[in-house]
Length: 513
Ligand code: MN
Image (cartoon, rainbow, N blue to C red; front, side, top):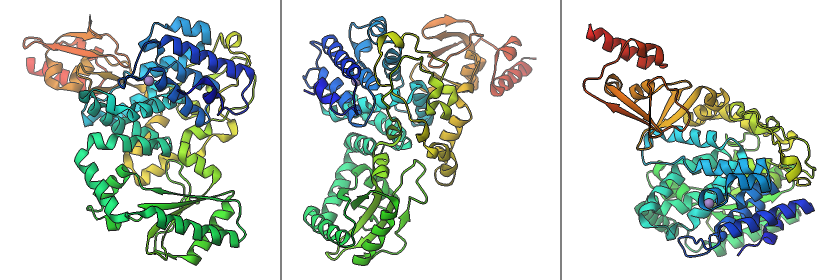
């Protein structure tokens, strides 16, 4: 099993306090989960340690890792919020509670509200670190999905594709996204999965040897040209991503040119263009296949040069050229922008300092880590590097406008303080209803259907009977009872917030007369 030592090994210059924090979180989690097992029968601690290890590999800081170790304690063990606050301080409690809260955002199998759900998911997380822990948590759960009872698998796998994958994609986290997709694919589309797998196998055959030969040829040419400090690797296209492409190309696999890709990673940008020239010198490039995502990055920040060539052995090969930094960003996305400095804590951390707060100001309520001083003194601060605020975050909206309208709306909504003005509530079966801030159960009822609105007899919010003028809050579960004889009154117009509800009420009152 992954030990605290394994996790600490990835930390960048950890202080004594950093080590102590992770060891303490590790042993607290180990004690709390003692005797608990996963569906696989393995000790529960395996899951928690795996999540922490992955975050550590990604370069996250000690607090995030400590929170990852504790992420299932409040929900599943006797450890309470007070315990965590006392032992680890408010900031880590905030992260653990954030992850716990995110578990309530669930996909219930209706496609209608997926975009709302993604927004709710991001909004609920409040802090990018919460989102990262949750994504990695899901990744590990997907890796062990085969042990989960059959009836639960499909829901979890669909939720992964509908909520987690798009979020990972928009955060530029290419590695997690690919893994999540390919883990969920066989559960959600078993027939298509088999078909895609067969097609790919038939098309590329035993590619390893050929690719290895081509890689060597390229290495030789680069070395001859005096480029020495580079690395090469190759990848096979992910099955789910191939499935998406095949659907657009009428299932003609010959139309897909990036089944196999050779990757060249060099120290700086000039080398990228030099390498492109050398590649075109040894292999014939296919026309119109050179894509310069360095000059024109993708909406989620992805940078690389792509070209497609026909090699001597007859392979059609995509080649991706990028710098080390671009490579790291392509794999880790937003996580690669959270950089930790050796900084002793002590002062109150101001949450508005985080660049994510600049992006979505309304997600961040003023919050002071009152007791952090005492509890985690000397622990390296998980502080995003000011200079590294990724510009692309601000550009996402603009660029999506050209390529992907749902993406544009997503980011624009965020930028326009969307969450300041909207709330998300649930029907008893889990559908999300998106309402303006200050909305009442009357607005909710009319949002469902005018007939529901016109016959409200009573309302329950979170299973409690409430009056019609109750202000709804984010995450409330609202249940409307109707009676044929119940009718709107004049007072309802004042209580209602949405124009739609007001209009329906007026119409109903008119008819009464
Ligand atoms: Mn978990």
